[in-house]
Image 1 (cartoon, rainbow, N blue to C red):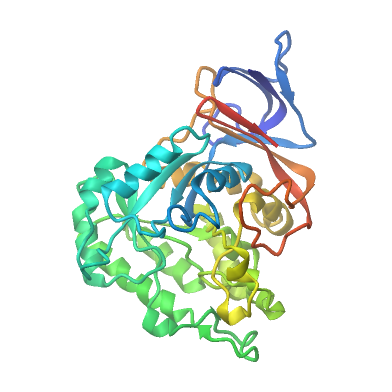
Image 2 (cartoon, one colour):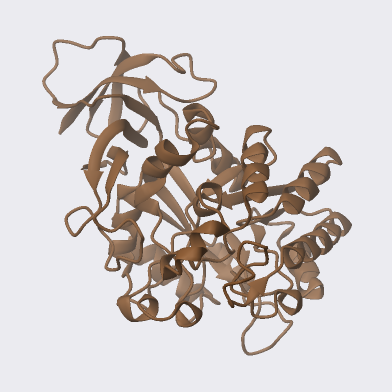
Amino acid sequence: MSYIIRQATLLQKGNTQHKKKVDVFIKDGIIQQINQNISGVSAAEIKGHELFISSGWVDMRCSLTDPGFEHKDDLSSLLDSAASGGFTTVITLPNSLPKIIDKSGISYLKNASKNHLVNLKPTGFIEDPDSKNNLTEMYDMFQTGAVAFTNGDEEISNGLLRKALLYTKPLDAFIISHPSDKSLEHGGMVHESSTLVTTGLKMAPSISEYVSLSQQLAVAEYCNAPIHFSCISTTESVSLIREAKKRGLKVTCDVSIFNLCFTDERVLSFDENFKVYPPLRSESDQKALIDGILDGTIDAISSNHSSQNLESKVVEFDYAAYGVLSQPFMVAWYEKYLAKAISIDCFVNKLTSGPSSIINHQEAKIEEGSTANLTVLDSQKKWIFNEETNYSKSNNTHEWEAEQKGAVVAVFNNNCVNLY
């Protein structure tokens, strides 16, 4: 089919139409025409109150529930949920059951997702679960399609990190680390702060992230190898990475949308949907993360999306699983919590060119003759998150049946289109 996106502000730095309102005509998955007013063509029209169009969004971090946890989300529902949030590419953690540790696991993910609108970019586990402090079959996984390697939220020793950095250095792959010293974290599940000290919940100090990140930066500098830090959450982490970049280290990082929008005060409600990892930090940490977005220290915004079934969440806070649905709310949360601090083009940049540069993939071009890989959002559209609009098998969110403002209305990719 053919489509015309009417009067959408185009957001793509370096594009001659950047920040201009345009019509975009798409036929057979190809951008045919971009102009201020397209007429004389027959096509389905996509209209809205205040439309913006960008290249398809890239999610740097999404939990993987297939294989092993298909009751939370199978691969199809996970990718459907990602598309509804504006993502045309997702990078999955290797935290399935079994873990993604060899080429058969990568092959399964690539084959099972190849006909979907959303491109799945799998990562492989770094540490061999059967042989501690030894690497998995990283080369085989890379050859089969793994874009990166990570231990997810599990701790990695500095010695194994050094091995992994040196091993992947000649490849077009990279290491992703979520920095956390588990001995300092000591089983804590919420931020250590005066706000939460009276709750009786086990607290995780920010120094656990600081110590781990500073050590891993030193290891990466020693190896002269690139490293990506996932879901940084503290003021100290932003400062460390800012200084590392000034010194010329090959370091990138992302921040979870959840940590950008919410602080530890939300935990006072004891709503298990605010039990996330890394934990929600203080207001000063939140401000430092926003400053890091604005000055370029933070390269990307990730969803840190993690679907959990009812039995994992509707229990006492102590026993609830970590994680929350976040992909569907990227636009709505931006409009509600971030729009006054971060411009829309800066926000979109952290979902497009920022993550694309990290994974060494060229950002999709918005120009005539290019394949349509696009995200279209309406900043004013009102909607309710419920059974009808939820594409996940799970509903672990405090936003259930709550009205939202701001939504993705269309995504184009792989000669497919989803309209919302």
